[in-house]
Amino acid sequence: MRASVRRLPLLAAALLWACSDDGGTDPPDDDGGLPAFTAGDQQLSPALRAEVAAMVGDVVDASGASADPEAAGVVGAIAAGFLGDGWITGVDASSASLMVGDPSLRLVSGTWGVFAAGVAVYPNDQAPVTAYYTAIVALNGNEVAIGVRKAVTEQQILNQRSDFPDPIARGLLFQGASRGWGALTGYMQVIGLKTITGGCSGTMPAGVSCQYGTSSAGLEILTSAPLPFAGNGASGGRQFLLDYGDVRGYAFDVLCDQASFC
Image (cartoon, one colour):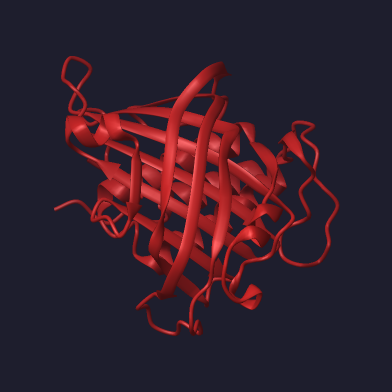
């Protein structure tokens, strides 16, 4: 049995890249968790990339979404790709104000840092895909909204959208790492790279290749309930709406005869 790799790829990459600087720019820090993002595409400095990756890793761990080695390896691959290039898109999520219900239940509006990812898993370079993971990540201050999906059939892969509840997809909302909600209703959708900018410059795990460019993605969580993890301080429900549109995205191919996690 393989040892768990839940956070090792993520943390090792974070430590590696946090110690260097390639000229990426950071938005101004508003002391509310992550710095405030500006609208449009932007490349973050390595230090802020590591902060984003660690924040997302904490959320994914708390939610249990990376409980099996393959899922954990996918998280590590996405982290390595993001840490290497650090592209993110500032998107105005103020359209959340159009949602019905109590405004106090909504995550904050304003400009969120958003990126998407698609990960295709193959037994080897001659075999067809056996799983296709997609994710959309949105961050603002200490709040994180994530949609994750694992498609395994041809129909699921071609459909590209999940409406919650769906056994192959999850929507997650977090305020810090100690208050988390899971989606009950809403949807997520991620379309793979529509345009390719180039290959990822980060150090990728064995058996993993990466490109980055432009994806399309959306995430809507209309109702949610606290997640069942120890120490969760969440109560009631929260809402989040990110309109479907173009964002920076990453595409990965995983060859399981070379990778250590599948």
